[in-house]
Image (tube, rainbow, N blue to C red; front, top):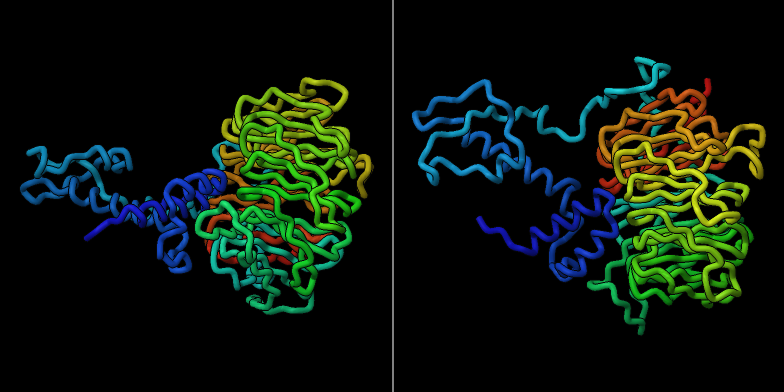
Amino acid sequence: MSIKSDEVNFLVYRYLLESGFQHSAYTFSQESHVKHTSINSTQIPPGALISVIQKGLQYVEAEVSIAEDGTILEDAPPLSLIDAVSYESPGIKGGGGLSVKPLNSQQISTPTQEPMSTERNDNVPATVTDHPPNLVKILQGHGSEVFTCAWSPIDNTLVTGSGDSTARLWHVDANDTSQNYGGSIVLSHQPLPGVHLSSEGGNRDVTSVHWSPDGSQVATGSYDGVARLWSLEGEIKSTLIRHSGPIFALKWNNKGNYIATGGVDKLAVVWDVNSGDVRQSYSHHKSPTLDVDWQNNTTFSSCSADTFIHVYRLGTDKPIRTFSGHKNGVNAIKWDPSGNLLASCSDDHTAKLWSMKQETWLHDLTEHSGDIYTLQWSPTGPNTSNPNANLQLATASFDSTVRLWEVERGVCLHTLRRHQDPVYSVAFSPDGRYIASGSFDRWLFIWSTSNGALVRRYRGDSGIFEVCWNKDGTKLAASFSDHKVCVLDLKTLSS
């Protein structure tokens, strides 16, 4: 038996990617040179590192469960991973085995088959409807993890972005009743001739996708530092080259004439869509730029691992406002539909609400007990198609919960607790009545925003990176770490 450092590094890199630690994965890939190895990533199954560790743990359990006289030691607590790495075998320490019991298959399975909450809302029903399998369409074609997905604003075309250096356009026909679908337009992120980029090994994982407001083009951001604009036929319309490292965020403004990008090189860049030129570049962050979002057609914000949030207006060289208050990296920012409030979430376990009218936060939302990975505003309240419904904010955390917040007072309305692993994505239905959440426990949950009740669930075969609703709320897509994309038909959700 031989173990090569390149192989160990590759499995660690894949574990970081599959667990959603894209920023850490990038840094590790640069330092370990995993992209220079000859390992075929398409032959490595999801969860490979955990699977190997579990098998090793079983072996140690078997070893320490047998005494020197051959008798099996019973009625002992399971061996933890830390116990296993600190254990000395009898041959080394000269003593008997530890009194432990081998793990059974249920104990080593991950994630949990039936997630149940230890603390849940009283109004969550004891039984939950499983989504009918015949109303799930599986989109297959990607050769690696599918990190991101987004529906067209005008029809049922879905764009997905993957670690296989491609994005794909899928037209999901409402009349197609087949459960497996492989037809898609492939947006291949090929190396650009004559352009030297800093991404070692030609890593072109697609990290972000975003539709133009009119649905005529889709933009993709990649680990190679290039943003690309594509037609609906799969042709490259523009290549936007300025970043020297992976792009982590990419957004069109509502008018559709500018795109903002943010990346590991600490830059926030605004591009003129018509010319493909840089409209303005900002370099005020001291660590990677993790997210960008437009307040209006000429003003946008950026956040960073440096804990700061900058607000920029085109034509000015410096931030017109800098928000400080987070104590760790800021993972995501979102302006509310009216452009009055900015929400941010951080590794410091807090989300905060900000206004351009003051320098300090309006509300500090502190009830999460883990890193907050993402957040979303409800499509309700002023400047939405649901103006009579109250505005809500959703936050998703590594503490395995989703929280819904009442914005005016900054109080938590509902805590959604059924997940067992970190929650990486949340998305409101277009009417604001439901919110979907996706986790690495493989579960896709749909909740009522009015009372926090879990109304529908679907279990995939691997961890979920992102969930998104189509424009009329009849379909919900989820992208998975096992290379698949699932589309749930939800026309019966309200029936």
